[in-house]
Image (cartoon, rainbow, N blue to C red; front, top):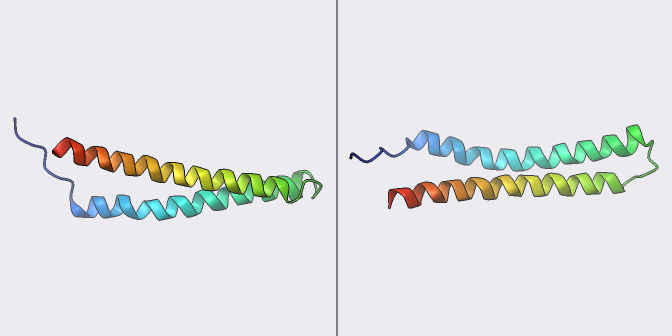
Amino acid sequence: MPEKPEKPLFRQLLKASTVGIQLVVSTFVGLAIGWLLDYKLFKGRTAPYLTIIFLLIGIVSGFRDLIRLARQGDGDNKKTL
């Protein structure tokens, strides 16, 4: 059975470049949600607690995606060996 050809370099670079973008976007989304809940919904009564909580959730979400992508890439390398 013939081996699968490797992914083109451009596709690998594109996948790697999304890692940084996902990490930054998930952090800012968590920050924005926390700020909106603190200052718009609860009118600052809970400030800065919800902002900090959702910021941490955003950071954890970004790193979770980073680890998932790293494991996925590692699995691709194991299949070719």
